[in-house]
Length: 369
Image (cartoon, rainbow, N blue to C red; front, side, top):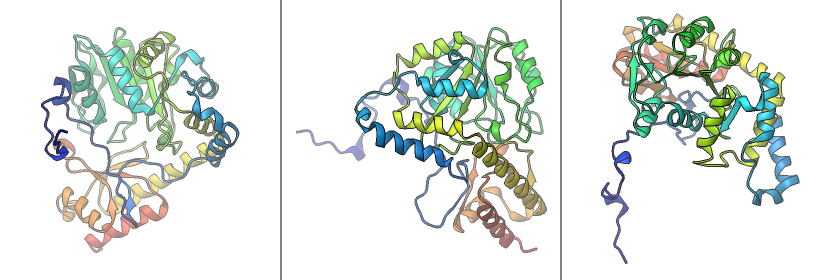
């Protein structure tokens, strides 16, 4: 029997791809009690009650079916999505969270000779996907105010991807600029990652442009606005040709990405429109109130249209990393990035009114008024 000590494991048997990977580091999921957790952009409100009802009913009425594989193409879920977004089923792809959907997009459309363009400040999983699939990812500088200048994307590329609203800045690029970007790059797949679009005060999803542009993919998720990060359901919207490519890749990777219970819960969430809209409006109101409170304390807050804010503490608070650490000592967890251009900012998830107030109370203790 081999005497194997896992603590002494090395990369002797690893493949070359894994050796060179720098994996994505998700936001911390601490297990301590009484923490004010504002670091992972989860929705502060529970999902629609109909979600739990649908899952319970699926278990009660169809427990026998759990021995069977789920519908490989998630037909009912895609049909419900098609009804909600006024599309055809063949314009919709679903996967195990939008991260898996985005990984499939990278594999299907970006493995080419030319670089893929993305904002220098954006979702930190994009570079990981690029490394995984051997893609040359070229980061494009943002303007001084952290917004995207679409003219900077008029250069040779094999694809473009950006989050809208962007992460971690929360800044939204309007549809007119997205249309120009699509027109200027007709031979490239342009991916608009709309994980946070439902929290915009005047949400205008790029889904409305799919019929006009065959090079557009819009990705979304159930994790944020529908409070279902625990179910892992994401989707992409595009013309049928691009969806077919995603299905070909999915069926060469995992034919059954979404289990029966997740499908049932996601469908129920889509059917409770009133709850969904009310929840989004509550988050928007809480964001507006938090921005005012932070601004009153001297913070410089970017114009967020997401369920988080990106805020720079005033100089009297000291270095931003110290503010982050002080908050943590008081049980308030936010997100700090060490990247040079954004090291002075904190990303703060919109919490409940009580959570947001706890954050403000702790900050006030740092520098008494």
